[in-house]
Length: 178
Image: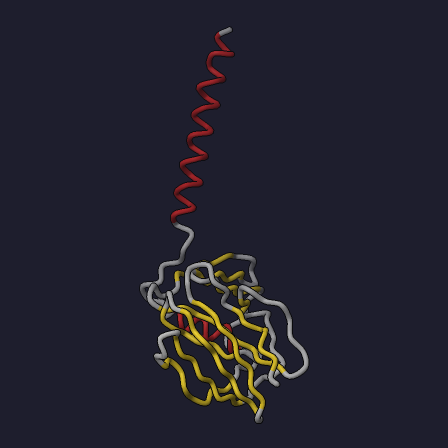
């Protein structure tokens, strides 16, 4: 009978200790970014200068799965939103959360006229930009806005509306150039 009375408190203590351990690890799952330029890190994965098994970028986090099977998480800038766009002529793929190490667009290393304005008519981008070796054009824009994107390539144009709110998509591949 005494054994049974000891088992319950021991079990409760173990469950409590495991819960505390999991909570501590959850709070410490992000890498220290004081000395890391996260935007440069994104650029390096996107351009192929750095390699990873996966490097997914959501509205607020860059999650890198290293080639050594380690997962690293980085907070994105609080005032900027990352979005990557891949206009296409023939072929595309469905995408919502961009994978810097895996997504490939059709038009790699091509120059595009890119124009982005918000719904109030404020212009954020109006320049010629070259797509990365992965076929995507990476953009950092202010958060919490509605935008209209126009891309032109060799006389063909694609247009779309998108937003930069929490949990919005970071990958736009629905841009057929017509």
